[in-house]
Length: 161
Image (cartoon, rainbow, N blue to C red; front, top):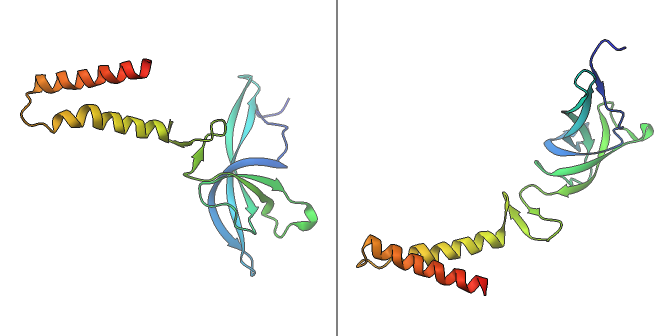
């Protein structure tokens, strides 16, 4: 029985995915490197549960593929090809660019948790239903609400047909 209750997972670190948290250059040749934060699981034998823990790995990025915040895949370098003792991985490819998220199933661009075409549709509906009746100064509040409700009902009937 080990002295600690936490076991590191037996999954190797040959191929991992993580987020670029820092970019730097090493050596006299100024070779670009990226610090990649990867999540690995640790098993607690008392709770019988895995817990995610973040580890930082330095990876060579000779072609400057990744930028700060990108999600990248890193691969372990053979012992003979390693440049320094601290850098044991290289950036294999960029999975997701930071700020440019595209849903892989639909192929549509996503902002936060909504598709861009849904956001545009909501803006058009707000302008059409809320803003246009407010432009008429002669209408009272109750009259504006009645006009807004009528436009909303018309749009609902168009969508259901």
